[in-house]
Image (tube, each protein chain N blue to C red):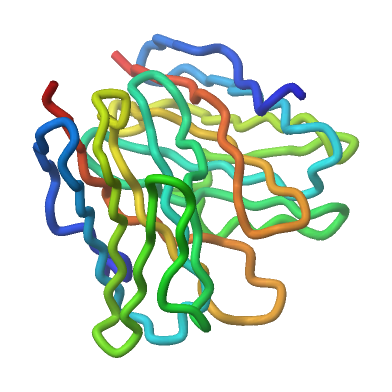
Length: 114
Length: 112
């Protein structure tokens, strides 16, 4: 049973426009969420994170929004650039002291069209 | 500084053979994770090492899979009697003080 779901396997966006990547989760006890970006033939790289006590975290062109009541988070990239084309993974930290495992979604492939 | 490194980057092996995959974590990171990513799937947790504690092996799919971490640094993932369904990208990650995990480039394993 998937606890972290990324229902869109792919997304295409025009350069300069906003990219919105979505992630849903089922476990309301998740307390920390992360986004990773992965280029082909490379490992995922950490992008941005948010704690469950916040509803927004911004870092440059990247903003993550968390809606706890809907168990939904989204990553906004604005403006989108061709170099943003990659697979984006959403991840969540299960609750529990000392719990450092992450549960990952299956990823969304973003293509930014020049 | 140096990131997580993995070797080999690619490995092709025949069904039934054993393989060893290596991970060098970021210096000073006490936590080390192994994941695998099969085609079209997300990252599947395999095993987690934290310092000198007993590893969390709850993600290992069968007893053909094992991992060691020597001296709290380098780790080796061993797959015995490989099967075609073992074909995947095997990713290693290390973590320091925060929650973020830092991944290596992965080893692409193909079992023929």
